[in-house]
Image (cartoon, rainbow, N blue to C red; front, top):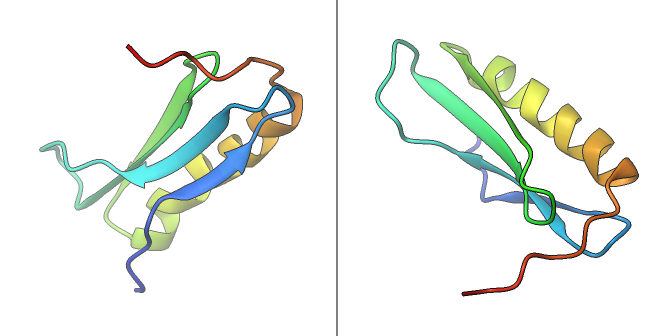
Length: 76
C-alpha cells in the first residue's frame, strides 16, 4: 500500500474534483471520499482493503469531472 496525497481531476467548468482519505471512525479501516468543488456532489467508499476503498471514488471523480460544467465555488 502506497499512501496517496489527494488526487484531483479538473471539470469542464474549471472546478476541481478531489479524492482524499476520510478519517471518520467507522466499521472499515479505509474510507475515501470524492468531492466536486463546483457542484458539491460527492461519493465515498469504505473497505478493509486499501485499493478497493480507493477504486470507486477515483472512478467516480474521473467520470464526474468529464461531465460537470460547474464553476469553482467562491471562497468565503
